[in-house]
Each structure stands twice: as C-alpha cells, then as structure tokens.
Length: 360
Image (cartoon, rainbow, N blue to C red; front, side, top):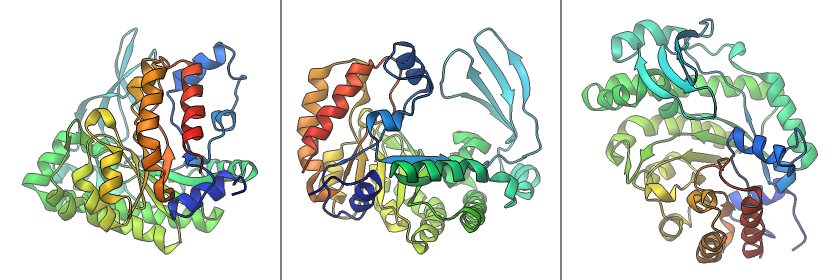
C-alpha cells in the first residue's frame, strides 16, 4: 500500500480498515520538551508532532470551570508549592518547580445542597467558555500537516472530580446517586451545547477525544453496575452526539478500567486509550476480548522508557505489536506520558522500532 497521510491513516484505523502501518501519537510532560530542546535535539519551539511524525493533533478549547468570573486566590505559598482556591471552589496545591498533578486539599461542593447553590446555576453554555481562535488555529495547522484532528476535552466523570473531588463524588454515588446523576446530566448537556456552538462557528474536527480517568491500580473507581446506572447515560449522550456528526470517539482513561469497557462500548466508545500497564491493564487481553469492537491505543509500559531500557522496550514491542496490529486496530503510544527522565535517544528508539514492527 502507498504511504498514507496521518489523517488518512488514523481515519482508517478507527474504522479498522487496511493501512500502511500502525498509527503514532504521544503525550509528553512539559519539562521533557524543555530538556530535549536544551540538549539540542529539538529546535526552539519545534513541534513534537512534526519532529516525530505523529499522525494526530488535538485541540483543548473548553473552559469548564464553574465560575468563569472567579479570580483564583493564593491561600498559601512556599518556595516549592502554591495552594490556590479556583473557580470550582477547589483548594489545590501545585508544585512550582515542575509539572505535576495537583494535590486535592479541599472542596466547597461536597454534597447536593452546595452543588445546587454554588455550581449548577453557573453552568451555562456561554460562548466565552470556548476558545474559538485556538480551535481554528489547531485545525488549520493539522490540515496543513495532514494530521487527524481531534477536539479534545474532559467528560462528565473528570469534570465532576474537579468540582467535588473523587471522595465526595464516589460517596455521593453510593449515598445520593440522584445527585451525581444530576451532575452527570448537567455536564453532558453543557458539553453537547458547547460542541454545537463551536462546530457551527468553526466546522467539525475529524474525531472527538474525551479524557475520563476512571481507575486506579487494579480497580476502577466504581463498579460496572454503578458506572452503567450513573455515568453511562452521560457518556451515551456525548458519544451519540459525536456519532450523529459522523465523528469517532476516543476515550482516554488512566488506571484499571477493564471492567468498565463493556459499558463504554455500549455507550458508543470507538477507541480506548491509554491502557495503563502498571495499573493492571493488558492490551493483549483487551485485544482478545474487545478487539473486534474497539481500536486499542497505547499499552506500552512507560516504566521501560523512564528506565531507558532499550532491551525491555524492544521485548515489549516485539511481544505486543504483532498481535495488536492485527485487523488494523492499533495506535502506538506509551501507557501514560513521557517524563523528562526518558532520554531523547530512548524515545527515538521506541518510535523507530515500534513503527518497524507495525508496518504492514
């Protein structure tokens, strides 16, 4: 087969149609690009997607914070961290010296009354929640590079987590499920309304990519039954909106989420990403169970990249890619993202060896 463009390749893979090779994409820590640039591997400001030949581009353009007019307040600051109250009413501690997930300290929305009083009335589909210019620029850049272009953003579980924290949301699922259902429905409808606004003004992408971290090590955050009763209706609403526009749906979920995959498929998921090995996910097992229904994206243990262990990287790629690439349903990616402890030459080896094995 002749060489395809990234846009053609990913479009075909998401339909499990013949392609020239597996797809390629990756996420990086901000510090990683800074390090590789300082070392001379990248030009200042060079696009990682272009440098490594990625097949996809994303655009993150929605502001889903509860109170758009709230100015974040610094509550406490040290040499290394800053504690801030944000527009969701969340108190978060962030590290100042490097990129890291913030520590969840406290939340103002912990139960139904606070939700109905502090949050829900402010969640309106306003145009100022959308960065139209950023979407337009990202779409145009993707078109010039002939990459598959995805609108990307968080879905209902991930949004609610930012407002209530995991603990209060999960306790609510058990003790007041109607409250959490109301949050799910509110955010699903807000997401659809904003997507309608954006697409009417700027046109549609090639696909939709939702971030929705629903697991931790060896367990999802909820049972499959709880997912199906409370969260799935919001996923179905947003996924069906995408499918109504002819757009495939990619779902990113860190952690162990295999028990939730049947429900995600029922809701309309076309592709599962990131398949976190260190949390207990196994892409080969997923391929056997679900490979006839969804595309798999990721599932390569980032710990081997962090350790700069080329032998382990080669062994894993050789063990997985021949099976994963069967029926044209696989996109290469680590099982999380690439930190600055991964050397440039290590990641270059990962890409080159992965595509060599992934060529049809």
